[in-house]
Amino acid sequence: MRDSEFEFIRTLVYDHSRIQLGPDKRELVSARLGKRLRATQLTTIGEYCALLQGPQAEEELSHLIDAISTNHTFFFRENSHFDFVRQQLVPEMEARRAKERWSRFHAWSAACSSGEEPYSLAMTLSECLPSGWPWHIECTDISHKILAKARAAIYKSEVVAKLPPAQVKAYFQRGVGPQEGNYRVRPALQQCLSFHQMNLLVGEPPFREPFQVIFCRNVMIYFDRPTQEELVNKLTRRLVPGGYLLVGHSESLTGIRHSLQMVKPAIYRRPTAA
Ligand SMILES: C[S@@+](CC[C@H](N)C(=O)[O-])C[C@H]1O[C@@H](n2cnc3c(N)ncnc32)[C@H](O)[C@@H]1O
Image 1 (cartoon, protein in one colour):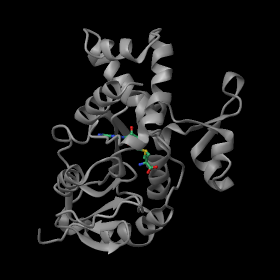
Image 2 (image 1 turned 30 degrees about the horizontal axis):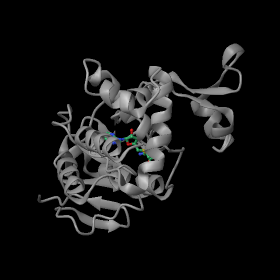
Image 3 (image 1 turned 30 degrees about the vertical axis):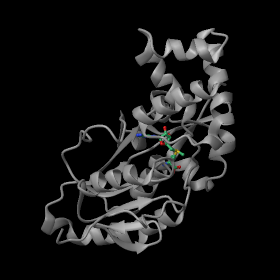
């Protein structure tokens, strides 16, 4: 890939998603563009850059972001967050619920990828929220393709086998026929989640009701500091006072201006008086 082509792709990806592709990502970009060349039946990256400037640019741009972004995730990743939800966050919110007149517990998985994160949260909430308090999880991601996977809620048996058997039994259906070897999240759990395609950095999230908890994990690492700051402040405004923002353990908020209190590593709380 020529310098000018890498620069063009890198700027386009940054402008659209704020994902930062440093010089160390050149090999990765080149490999991922290989897939797009095959899909578009083009032969050179130069032709591909021309496609991204032509009438089909918008459609291709969304495929490009899909190809570039890293969707790696798994069930109960950074499990201490789910313990925290179970042991501290839910009891705390439950105690405030009547006074605050919260009709439901509202959570947001802000970069949900293929769904393992919000379904892990869904399993957790269904086990620890008192019956009679409805709950809902909003799930967003920039990638249409990965959201389609999350919506389908179908996972390979080797992935699901890592969960405790009781959880598999309670929350998954084993596939038969063409779905042999796969498991699907049961509809009763799935209906507590909604999926929306959304770039976290463009516009305002389409949710009116504030959140008791927002998971925004393992996405900020791809953004520069000013972008992280903008995002953290945008998310903070969406929390109820006393609500929690959970970030990935490798994503410290040190060095960015925000109004949150650190509770534990990767767990932040909006002050109640804010
Ligand atoms: C590494 S995955 C993290 C998944 C999950 N939160 C976890 O911690 O396992 C990062 C996700 O962020 C999404 N993403 C990247 N940039 C985004 C943006 N600007 N807005 C929304 N989602 C974005 C990617 O599509 C990807 O699915």
